[in-house]
Length: 638
Ligand SMILES: *[C@@H]1O[C@H](CO)[C@@H](O)[C@H](O)[C@H]1NC(C)=O
Ligand SMILES: *[C@@H]1O[C@H](CO)[C@@H](O)[C@H](O)[C@H]1NC(C)=O
Image (cartoon, rainbow, N blue to C red; front, top):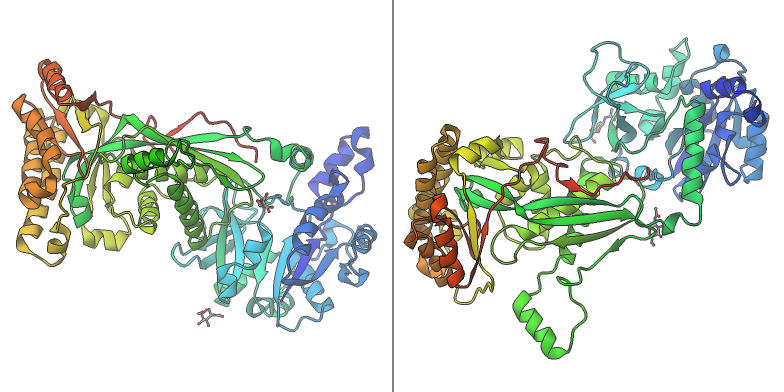
């Protein structure tokens, strides 16, 4: 069981003063404590906390600690809501000078309830602005709390926001444990920018330390200074949960914050709000890619170079909605057919690989990722849909493009950024979504889709093990232009797996078979050599390496595995003075040739019924990875 202590004892807030200064328009608010200011539809600031607290079954008792000046106001508020006046504690203060400090106020409440170190204590500042999407239930039942740790929520200070009036936590990224708590840091006392608003879940082990702390403290100890002492001096176990940047619990709000909040809540509370679909909709994108050098060694701890292309992409569109909905794609997730024969035809041709399962698995893994990383997501539902023009079954990483776009959409919807999902970690998250669905894949595609542009990747297992990700390096658009000015793609418009023989290379490689291990490491070294050639702008060496990449792959996998169509795609290039290789698993080739041969190469492919397209490399404008690819975005209502 849990008790909840709501602190509303602060005197003379900035807001109260500003209301007095603002004159007649706000006269009706004068003298009201901040927590009891009306917000929307007759509800007061404290009512929003109250609604959230009251609905938590774990919370058995609620106590309010108020100053003497506002005591009657709060007593009236409490009895109107069925809270016994016994639970409203008067700390006796009437001025800021005589205030006791939040630690002492909390102790008063614990004494009043006869606390004997048996229950968890949730403590909140009741005059902070409660955000409607604050997920109290998730915090009270957080996995760390269940495992016996106390909890501090934190948010990242905005650029230029001073840390000096806050409690700042240093956190072990792996365990989420608070390793150091610095109350009101001065100067460079800590590099951390994670600040704690007044919201804690205290386990009995920590709450029971409070009397000792308060007795040994002459002044007006804040709750932050208590946490500092409990963590740094007493070695208490406190975990940190991060609130994404989209919402704050604001303590020292002024009149303008209050007016903004009224507007916000009025909008949220209005009956038309849930129907406001379309407002705040945002679309994110991820591009298809071609593997240029070293593939498929990425699945074997090797090295590759890959490029995102602007010709093909997947998009995810997300918008706030009353319920959480995933929208099936009318073409790719068919559920309505023109008869049994039509169903048969579509199923044979398209398989069973719609995008819905990708959306669902991406949402599932996204939540798990956030829980593992101690990220407290706001409570909001959304409607999520997708669109893609990546040709299917030709190895251009169409499904990981959908997953990457969806994760980007979720990140933006919940206001996560690179501090929550670093660009080198995003590929692991995307891969884990696909692993969940039994899709067998390497990391290359997800990495280049996260970073965008031309990317060199080294998946050396020992480095990977140590860092949790590979070594990834962006090469520039001008380097690409010098080394490979012309790239094209040819693929089969009617992809078919028939006749393809399953490869045993992976198994042989795992078993340490010398041919497999050496063959794969030779393919990986193509990427390392190509990196040098690209840096030097050596176009002829790049062509030679593309051809070598194919030769090595053919030698290792054998013609039966590659299949007749794939071999034909390569030989058309060779017969026409061009160079080609597989950009992915097969079904397409990426190639290059002199500009004056382009037309005849195109004709040769088209004569054989293949689709031919000149590639347009995609580099993100700002060189940022995780959230770079976005289009048509409208600001979200937060
Ligand atoms: C913190 O947690 C660890 C492991 O759960 C436990 O062994 C240790 O005693 C705890 N420390 C304190 C001060 O409670
Ligand atoms: C999300 O949708 C569910 C089901 O429709 C609903 O019960 C829940 O209240 C919604 N949550 C929010 C935060 O709107």
